[in-house]
Image 1 (cartoon, rainbow, N blue to C red):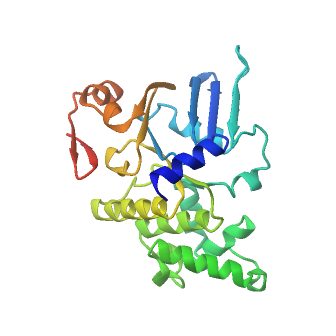
Image 2 (cartoon, one colour):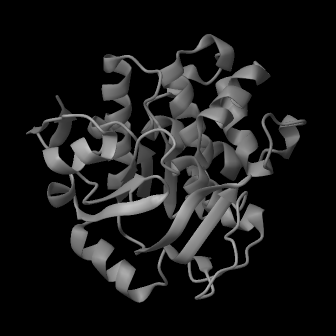
Length: 272
């Protein structure tokens, strides 16, 4: 999808995400503090912050596990222009990829192909193979090819690598052809080679027309196709704007509380 096409899509559709004055408590602690932001359909964004900055809570507001606290002005949290959603319907529009889901899939010990196709049924694993339609099987094969894991179809999921497992979980989300994919710390626990391979997959996903919302604390995860970066600290948005303006040495030093230097190589940003 070209940048022009993405821009047209964003102008002609409700925002993908729209938050106004969203405050979320976790116990007696404020996890998100008066968050206001808008993400248009067609934007690829990264949300960057240290541990404890509110990134996980932000994800849980999208998955409807956390709700805003009543405030003044009255808060709202809209996805695709709507505040109320059937969760199964919502998950056809936003694919969610988390490390918890990857762990759940690994514990099933099922073959990779069954793990992926079972996403059509909202489960991990298919009870009866006869329930899988030819269309489901074809879409599963297409997504496995896109993510370069077709050769793993019959392998038990607990025998594959961590990097391969993360691709399997992405494939589960992508079989529904969602408009956006939400990635939570996607390269955590991966070695440099596996992380680089996964970033290659992110770029393929974007090129195929799916938007990325990436939540991370790792700068190299922010692929060149991500143009906007939001910095989150202590539950607040401290910076939001074009990547080159936000990812500066001064901003990142303040975000992480360290004396850091940001360098850019081949379209990627790195911390020194």
